[in-house]
Length: 100
Image (cartoon, rainbow, N blue to C red; front, side):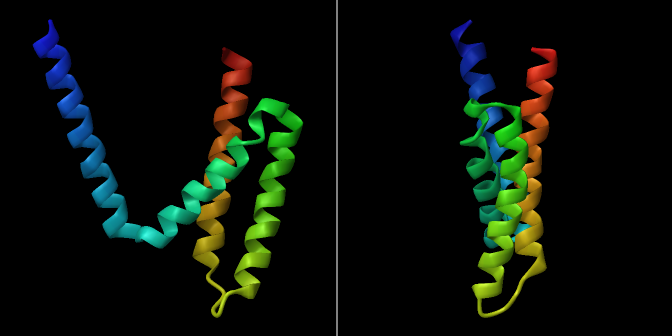
């Protein structure tokens, strides 16, 4: 039984590393950082309910836009990845609120 659990943990860790490496090669570390920053910042709002989480999506977009205006070069993909990360947090929150 414990050998089976250990093999599954090793398999899941290896799978996670392969996915991480693939995403890192395809999009780059900078884009993934923007994605996870947007998701994490919006996840901080989920304990306060659905309305703050949805409003947080727009606030994170606005903050990302202002941040990109202050960068040396405006990168639309950085803004897109932060917004997608935030949006996924909203979708997961709403899904869990409805079905759980």
